[in-house]
Length: 419
Ligand code: EPZ
Image 1 (cartoon, protein in one colour):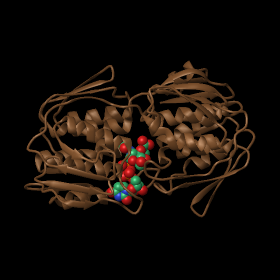
Image 2 (cartoon, rainbow, N blue to C red):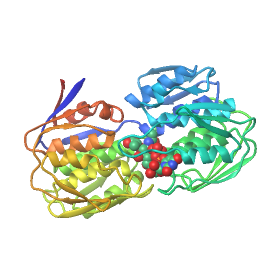
Image 3 (cartoon, rainbow, N blue to C red):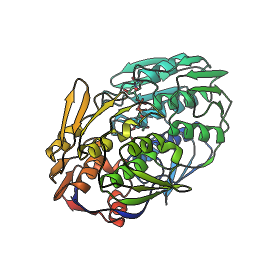
């Protein structure tokens, strides 16, 4: 196993390119189960999670070739059971349930289990499948869904923490081959869900309201293959924006969709960061002095929970006090302990994180945990005095393609070492 070593204190410069969106890629790869025709998906980022999804598709009988960021998926799936050994390594694989149920009228998928950011329930997914007429059993850690024929319905899919990204995708995929019309109220409207709708429409699905909280899906008899290019990863882009701000750098991030980064730009302008917008790029001008800004995460277009840890790391070195609240995953604060080990001064106080900015962080051996907490530790390592060693970097490799190469290219002193 490798570890990442970072020597802090270097400014970044030049250009950094964002890869395809992990969270658009996963449900779109799952959606190829809805047809036996060939699908070509381009700009697929080379990540542990995308390779896991490709392995899962192969275990279901699909033929998958993956070269130079292009995945070609063809053939008929010959199983509707997604095994524990694959689903347990990546909860996102639960989004194969909708397509399998829709295509095979049967699906058996391992319950994804929890992870460090929360218990990760699937009750909204199950509520949606039941509304479409599926009989659901939960047995020995598997969710088993059966339906002679899925029928369209009006479904309210909002949960106590708001809409669910993957439940919206799962139910939309199940409804695409159901009989009649399905209305999904309180659908998630994240760009990744909008991309999934776009792909399904290219496959011949009838979906109205893409990118809104109300989706209308009219079931069709069959779906055909499609050729689709994945859009840029807004969370990777936001992570680089925050790294530029933290290292007081002028850095251009290429291959972005500005509209997806509005809330981050808005909060960082309040903190004193300046920006120059290009056609599909954003130049970040990190100031010498930052002002503390508090954020609360919400479903899109609110501040993304997937940038919360990285933003907290930035506030950890910003003089003054900021309060960070996560309304999507209220317990997503595992990164506090590791940041404090680097000299940050952050405490939990009745459910929120209170960050008292310190002048300096100090390099230390730290442990990666969830994907975005690990990115927060890389950001902290870039600004810390001395050397930071990040262990268990497979968490990072799940969602960031060639992170150390990209950062090295713009001036960071970062390299891998054997554990
Ligand atoms: C997606 O997860 C993303 N993953 C997550 O990104 C992201 O943090 C999350 O959406 C929120 O934006 C992928 O797309 C692969 P949710 P998802 O269902 O769909 C609760 C990353 O770092 N909920 O939108 O699993 C849930 O507990 C990952 O790339 C229910 O209550 O998240 C949470 O509080 C981490 N019942 C809230 O809804 C359900 O049935 C939002 O979760 C489902 C979810």
